[in-house]
Amino acid sequence: MTTNERESLVTELTKSAIPGWAILVVRLNRVVAERLGVAETDVQCLHVLDRHGPATPGTLAKHVKLTTGSASRMIDRLVAAGCVRRVADPGDRRRVLIEPTQEGIDRVGEAYAGLVARTRDDLAGFGDDELATVLRFLRTAELSTAAEVERLQAAPGRT
Image (cartoon, rainbow, N blue to C red):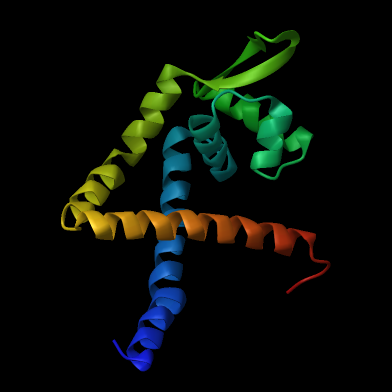
């Protein structure tokens, strides 16, 4: 591959394919939130709980970048929707942990089942080395995206 061909591919990825996909993921999460009867940030909270396990309200607030008051309202919505419950922290009974309910796990799983199935079908055509490359890219992109979120949030004013 020539330098120009490579640059063309990188440009297509960064200016078209990835932003287009990211916008669709945001739209999908909005639809999922509507189906669950919660806000989009609430869906992010459910992903955090799925990925990291039960957490304190303060920890959840940090993960989804909410104030503690907004996180409390988020948790109230998720409890009302049957997606999470408050439980005593077994390590410190004075603290409360938020954990997903089986109903919440099932509902989220059902909401994303179509995408999971489609993605598995899409990936079936990839070889082992290609899958490893896709995974490496996504993990790297996740770290870069998190770093950019932090940079923008720390920067004064508008960009």
